[in-house]
Amino acid sequence: MYMNAGYLNNSLIDFKDKSKPLVVGSCGTYRLDRRPKLPTYRPRGRIDYQILYVKAGIAHFHFDHEEDDTIVSAGNLVLYRPKEFQKYEYYGADKTEVYWLHFTGGNVKNILRSYGIKDDMRVIYVGTSLEYERIFKRAITELQRCQPNYQEMLVLLLRHLLISIQRQIAREKKLTNEYLDAEMDLDAQYFNDYYNTEINIENYAAQRGMSVSWFIRNFKKYTGSTPMQYIVSIRITNAQILLETTSYTVSEIARIVGYENPLYFSRLFHKQKGFSPSDYRKQTAQPH
Image (tube, rainbow, N blue to C red):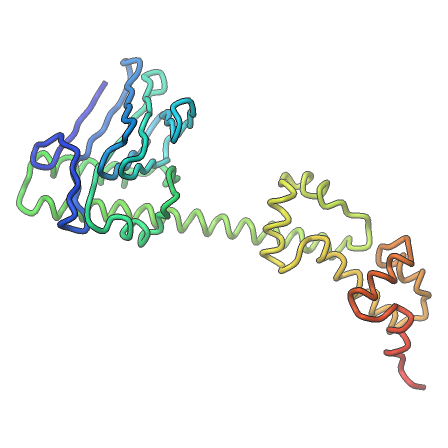
């Protein structure tokens, strides 16, 4: 096992300091290759904040309850807040390499929020980058050498890390939004093309690899209506056009826009437009 660490004032004491907005207390790294297991167990947590960055391999975290086992892979960061239950293990067989940093301060919660780290964020995907490794290694060196203004440099390094995390969160959010927009646009176009066929929303979502609740929720965010409301709106709009511009019967129009039951179509049309299809045709008929 390889380890390298540095501590503020050469002290291993877990401390809280509210005299400054941010204070870095310690930073270090572990790399397991032959040692079978490296466990950490703090049932009452610590009184400072802790960031753990999994650079390689995987780590096992037990959030909230000892029996829970969350596998955190390389490229993810774990954030512990003061007094949170801590239990996690690294295994030599997993070739785990982790960097960690402890910090405190009088305005930590607001500072984290300002960098896009919400109060409920626990595991954050940040990707694998040499940039993170360089920040941690520089922090370790600053703590070990204690050069002039090293405490200020440590805060700058922590802010550098937080900015990098914020940018990655923004990229992930943008990619997610781009995927959602593309997916919902594709779905809306499908409904426009096949609105007059029998569409089962649950089956459609399953064919697209989505849960029906996720699909309905995000489609509504994108279009302002549920998938079925969207389909019904297209059907009624096209029925209106046919009523205004053709001599098809109401039954024929019902079938054209996707309803085999003309009575059901008439009730639905009346509910949407306030007129029966026949009355709507009379209201919009052009005088000869």
